[in-house]
Image 1 (cartoon, rainbow, N blue to C red):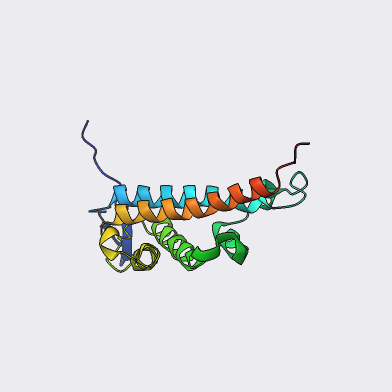
Image 2 (cartoon, rainbow, N blue to C red; image 1 turned 90 degrees about the vertical axis):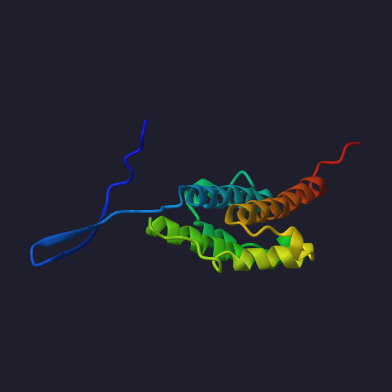
Amino acid sequence: MKRSGLPPLLKTIKDGNITWERLEGVDHDTLGYLLSCHLIIEHYLTEALKSRSWPLDELQWDAARLSFSQKVRIVPPSMLGQISSLIPCLKHLNSLRNKFSHDIAFRLSGDDLAPLSGFLKDLIRSPEEVPSGAIEILEMFTAVACSGFAGYIARGAHEFKPSRS
C-alpha cells in the first residue's frame, strides 16, 4: 500500500487566501530513533535516581511526574563519576528532542550532534572509532549513557545488599 504522506501544514492566511506547505523530506527514521534513544535514556536515568532514594517505598516517583530536564538537573555528581560530562550532552539531547517534538519539519544539521560526538571522542580517545552518521552517533551515545546509569544502579545494589550470616 502506497503512503500518501502527511497532511500539509497551514503556512499563512492573508487577504482571504490560505497557503499550505507540504511536508517534504521528513526524516522519520532519525526522528523515531532520536525519540527512542531519549526514552530509553530517560528510563535508565529514572531507575538510577530511584535506586538510591530513601525510603524507596515512600517516594512517589510516578506522582511527581518529573520531566527529563528536571531529572537531569537533580543527578548527583557522584552518579556518573568520570563521565559526568555526560550531563550537558543529556541536556543537549533533550533540546533536540524538543525541537523535533515541536517542529515536524525540523532536520538535524551536521552540527546538531557535535556535542554528543565530541563527548564520545573524548571518552573513547580514538576519533576514528566514533561514527559520523546521526543514527550511529545516537546509538553509541545511548549505549554509553545507559551503561553509566546501569553501573550506578549495579554499584548501589552491591553496596546495599543485605549481608548473609
